[in-house]
Amino acid sequence: MMPTIFIALFGAAAIWFGVRVFQTSSMVRSALSLLGAMAAIGGMFLAMEAEFLGVLQLMMMATEMSIMAIFMVMYMMDPGGLGQMDMSHQQREALAAGIVATLLAVAVALLVNWGTVAKEVDSTTVQLRALGIEIMERSMLLFETVGVTILVSMIAAIAVAVAREPKR
Amino acid sequence: MTMLLMIVPIVVGIWVVATLESWVSTGRFRPGRPLAAAVAMLGQESLVPRRPDRILFEIAPPILLAAGIAATTVLPLAAEVIVIDLATGGLFVNAAWVYVVVALIMAGWGPNGAYAMVAGWRFLAQLIAYAMLTVMPITAVAMRAESLSTTAIVESQASGTWNVITQPLGFVLFWLAAMAVAFLPPFDHPVAPTELAGGVTAEYTGVRLAIFRLGRLTLILTLAAAVVVFYLGGWLGPWLPASAWTAVKTLTVVAAMLWLGRWVPRVRSEHLMAWSWKLGIPLALVNILWVGVTLWAVDR
Image (cartoon, rainbow over the protein chains, first blue to last red):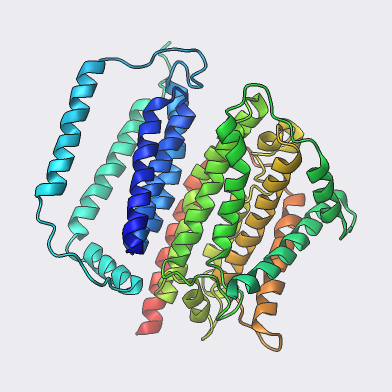
């Protein structure tokens, strides 16, 4: 019973922070609200006794959202939201896309056969071992491919971004 | 019960760290100073700057303190004296430290002041420099222990030698990264007293500043404790009781960190990033490879 209550509470917090992301004009508040939503999802993982995923979610998202915050501040015209600038556009299309995506997500949640609910969860040590073996065996090729792809895209992005000396 | 057992050493530890810090910065040993400073700060008016981002301004110091306290929960004082022995302790302690960045960005952005904001974003740059150097050495430590649990990591050093002997490279990298996480000199960009007038703390006074200071002291203590747990055998040692060993080692590491910072000029942001990425990360990879090879050789 208790885990269900916590999952519901963290879920509600995630949705509330998610809404806050779009309610503010301040880029830093927006990025940190998204961090709040992500951290709440980390809390949901912890409530579901997926300790590694929960801790990883809490750690990775804090770094990523902080870095995202500085990019949002750098690229937006009115990062503090104090200039009363309206940064929204294509509102009807966005609304339609939002409704369709929500319906799809609800449909997936309701229609997919999730199997029987686990009565007991393995200890974290067993989970960690299983995760390690999964990554090093069956999913090895997938992880390596994704890793190398990300590395290549990072190098490409840096190569594109590096300013060239103008020819004299 | 363990909770209570842990609170007393943490409070005493914070007091010793504060005394050491004032000793290092003023050259005078005054054990009563932390208490006097705390009373003075609590009695001071807690000013709110003009047009702040009030929410971020208010929650930044508590988040810094919470990050420090969260990190203490997974660091053992002795074999059984730990608040929660998480199977993912080595990862959890990192997750707690990451929220230091979140707190400092909030403290930088919140007060609507130029110095604070520059300092906050500077610490984000510092995170990009040190982040990999906290995680990669811990990976090598976990490889030897075959576990991320902090107690298992200490126990892995019971038979044979401490990790500082078997993984000297990882020890040096983690030590430096730990100093950068706690923004101790020469990595004190977010406060930088001589150029940013206190940086993220520039606009804080009174109770809020007291909470911020307390958070930072807790953070320094947890980072030193982590160095001890990961590399210096934790509670292991002859004659003295286990928890006394942890205390002695942790405070020695704190003293050494503070002392080191006195002799090195502040490292420039771009130099710190260049050195971390071009030298630090390759060395951390060499460390992982070295530990892998030595463990494999011992196993054979």
